[in-house]
Structure formats: structure tokens, C-alpha cells
Length: 333
Image 1: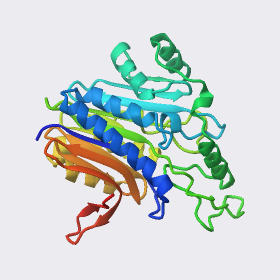
Image 2: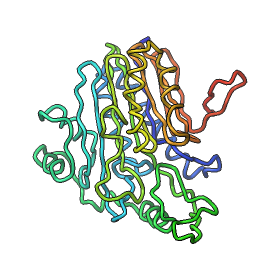
Image 3: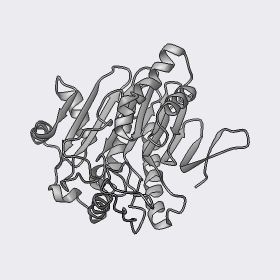
Image 4: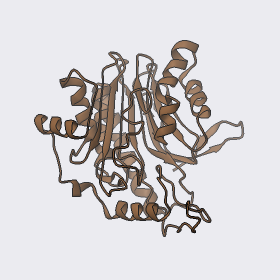
């Protein structure tokens, strides 16, 4: 079926009342990244190069929870993480605890290609970045006013927040004091990821995130955990988003591949079964198969997402409605 590409900008509780000034910059970035990725695939670029290219672009956008837009820990710092994986070889690389690296996804690829290891974190990952000469920024570069405010709201509500969540009206903190209601939608930034299959049938995936708002310093989520938030083999490539602890518990990305490998399920059925098996409101994923099939599934209210195939299908969406036949239908945007 030729090449195919899918990307996401996070899943969560995105209200349909999301104002245009918050919605449109994200959709514009997804469209731009989709065009960037499809152009690269048409030019014959390898899947691994394409997913890195797209995720770097998403990391540079302050509207998503990765790179420039990474959310803050309880200490008010940024701790970024990323992972890449190549399906044919099962080569993979991951990083966590980054505070100065401009593009965590590229450092993850360097771990894969230039070290005997899979995973580097915190001081060791930062030292490796300096040794490799990758672009770094002062930590203040990643701390935006928007995310400072989001952390303040999360602290007042005594919550650790996943992508696109906010304190609910009437919710109580453990001290039984009323939780304040955010003045806007918390600005809703989301983890980013991309999966691709190229014209030669090679599969690759990449995921990048800043984690949870108000997370404990040192917390590591699903994104850099191979088989949880990120996985690719000879059958499919998967990038997940949502509540990291649940994605790790349910080994979401690997389970999609396992159902294809051991049960013979097609990509769409495998992804649907895995997403349905996780607690509601916690998981979204994008996936592609070697045959060029694309799947974008979530059990959250919404997921910022986009995809395109060589066969001519293209889609950009946030919410999903049920069609007359009960099938999921992306709300046109």
C-alpha cells in the first residue's frame, strides 16, 4: 500500500469549547508537520529520518508538551524525555531528565546509533549531549509563562495533570478545600509522536514529552520506556500518549504489535483492543503497519492527530464521533 505517516500532539480531556486561539495554532502545526513528513516520504527518505524530522518540528512548537513547550515539575523545572525505534532491526534509543537539550528526540537517536546502550538519563544524558555537540539551550528557554501558570493552577488544585486536563468544578483537594477553577483551559499542551512506514516497507517511531504537570522531580513516564509509549517491529510502529503510568502498566505499544504477531489481528483491531483494555480516559496512540495501514485510536475525550498515506488518504482531527454504523468518525477540521 506504499508509505504512510501518522502523528499526534497528545490525548486527554479537550473540551469542544476550546477557543479558536488555542485550537488553531495546534492544528496549523499538525498540518505543517504532516506536509513536512509526507514530502520527505515522497522524496524517498527513510522512515527513521522522517519520524525524527517531524518530532523535532513538534518539539520546537511551544503549543505541545515536548521540547520548547514542556510542562514543569513540582520544582518548577523541565525534565524532557524521548525515544526512537526502528522496526526492522529493533534498534532503539531513549533519554530522560533533560533540561538543556533543544531536541530530545535527536539525542535519543544518537544514543541508539553511537552508544552500546538503549537508555541514558539525567546527568549522564546531558553529558552525552555535550560530548556529541548537539544543540543546547539555557533551561530558562523551555520555561514558558503559560506553563508557569499551568503549574500554579495544578499546585492550587493539588493535582498532577496529564495532557489536556484541568481541575474539575467542585473537585476537592485532600484537605477538603475547594479546588480553584482555571481561568482558561490550562492551555492544554500534549505529548508528541510520529510513526511512519517508507516506500521500502521500513517502520519507525518516535515520541517526545515533558511529562506531567506538577510531577515529582525524577519521575519517568511511558515515552522513553520501549514497549510502553514507543515500539516498532517488522509489523507495525506505535507511539502512545496519555497517562504514562497506565500506559506502562498495560505495555500499550508492544501489545499492539503482539496482537498482530501472535493473534494475527489487523492493525486497527489490535489497536482498538489495546486501547479498550486500558482505563477510560488514559490512552491514545497512532500506529502504522508495514502494509501502509494507519490507525489513530484513543479512549480519551480527544486526541490531536493527523495522518496521510500514499493512497491519498489524509486526516487532521481532535475529537471523534460515532457514525451511523457505530464506527468512529473523525470530526472534520
